[in-house]
Amino acid sequence: MNRKQRHDADGPARVKVPRGRPLRGEAEHYRERILDATTAVFLEKGFEGASTNEIARRAQTSKQTLYTLFPTKADLFVGVISAHMELVFSRHMDYVESGKAPRRVLIEIGCKVLEMFSAPDFLALHRIVVAEVYRFPDLARAVWRECVERGQVLLAEYLQTHRIGGPNYIKSAAQFNSFVLGDFFINVMLNPDLELSERAVRSRVREAVEDFLRLHPIRARKQERPHGNRR
Image 1 (tube, rainbow, N blue to C red):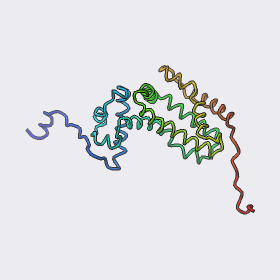
Image 2 (image 1 turned 45 degrees about the vertical axis):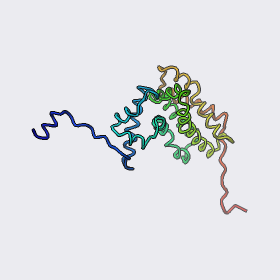
Image 3 (image 1 turned 90 degrees about the vertical axis):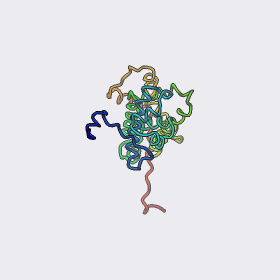
């Protein structure tokens, strides 16, 4: 029996699982596969029931590679949540340096935030954090630090750059998020059937931005004097 016949007789070849520390160029590829597998496992089994063995198997990678990129199960969970948040965070410098009117930028930011919190996978993951907060407080702290707190810092930088709110810009950023999410967040957390159309999202965000700007009107930005006019 030749090699091909032996292969056919034994069934399909086993998938080769990469072992050891991934090369720098491979890390992002493994990271995406691991996060996809992590999302599926957490949504099926919750945080406590999720197994790193199962995640590694579904991602077709070794546990050594898994732990090199994500040292703990909490790091895996935060990585999944952060991947969703990055859709908002990645535009930060574009917003800061944009010549667009602040009202328009705030509407864009608000829509992205509300769309993210409306996404079924993100909501299900967020419900897991809420359900596990007392048994796994470090998980909740990590999600708060890497996602909520980081988002507020980035938004505060934008608000300060455009002289909106303050002098505590972190507080102003938190108020903006409260205006955008408001009762929607409570309703959607408790009502799995609640859905918002794209039109409804934009309408809600426009109202939230107007309410926020009534509390924190846009102030004129200071103009620098030309060097020749200085005394």
